[in-house]
Every structure is written in structure tokens, then in C-alpha cells.
Length: 217
Image 1 (cartoon, rainbow, N blue to C red):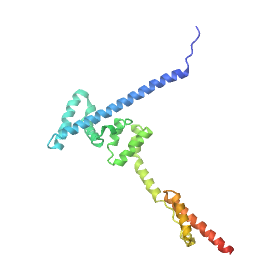
Image 2 (image 1 turned 120 degrees about the vertical axis):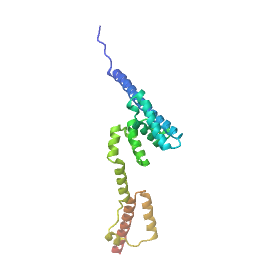
Image 3 (image 1 turned 135 degrees about the horizontal axis):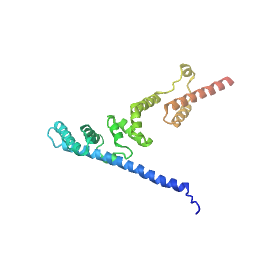
Image 4 (image 1 turned 60 degrees about the vertical axis):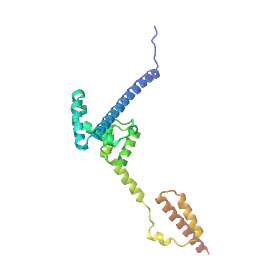
């Protein structure tokens, strides 16, 4: 019997199917875990609202619930974990806004961020760049968001100002030339650096042209 040959593309395709299924299974488990902790937090908050002294009753609810859950499910539902669930619900009160790309470990990092804009930035970056929990934590600890804000502020303030000698060379010119200069600035877009340089270059060229005509007269 002749030796049969199986194409490599066939084997690769089967492996791809298996790998995709495994990845989807992991994502599905992560998603269900996030929703589980969100719903636990929701139940805790709603139960707290039934007490007259919400702060005291809330502490009692978490303590009593922890005792019940530890017996049946183990330390995965410690008092600290349930307090995190409660904070998770307060931070993300709308379930459908939760991102399927993020797991519970990542959300635990995100709920520590009190600044809403900063939190949103890391959510979007983590999803866009497919960051792991460790990568997200590293970026937060490196103050990526603050460094980005700082660099943005610097770029906004970086405007070229002509030297006094350059200003001396800028002489008066006709209204038509002013209109042309304004049009050139408008066409440069929103960047103040480009606008100002276009304006200065226009004036200098006009001044040079005027001097040439005077010298040739």
C-alpha cells in the first residue's frame, strides 16, 4: 500500500479551528466571570439600600454573605473580593458598557482609577492593543496617560515667535497683502506653529520683494 500524504494546509486549518475554539472558550469564561462579579456587586448594593443605616448595614451584608459563600465556594468569595464587586458595580453601573475584551483582573486594575477620562483612556488602549492584565498594569504604573497629557500640553504651547530683528524687517503693506496673508494662514489648518510661520514667511517675502523693487528703481 502506497504511503498516503496529507497536505500541510489541511493540518494547519484543523489546528486553526482548535486554537480559535480554545481562545473563544477562554474569552467566554472571562466574560461570564466579569458578569458574575458585576451581578454580585449589583445584588449587594440593592440589598444595602434596604437598610436604614446603609453604611453599617452594608458592612453587615458583605460580612454575612462572605461567611455563607466561603463555606460552599471557598476563598474566591472573600470579604475583600465582595467589596471589590460592590465597587465594580458602582464604577460600571450599566452592564452593556462592559467590554468583552477585558477580563476580571484588568477590571480590578481599572476600578482603582478615580479619574474618568484616565480610566476611559486605559480601557480603549487595552482593547485596541490587546493588552494583557500585566501589560495594562505596567502602563498604568508607568503613568502613560499623564505623560501623554504632558506631551500634548507642550505641543500646544510650542509656538514659534520671531526674533526682534525679524520683527524690525516687517514693514507696513497694503490691505490686499494683508488679505493674502490671512488666506495663507487659514489654509495652514489648525496648527498654530504652521500658521505663524506661514504668516512670517509671507511678510518677509513681501518685504524682500518691496526692497528689490526700490533698489531697482
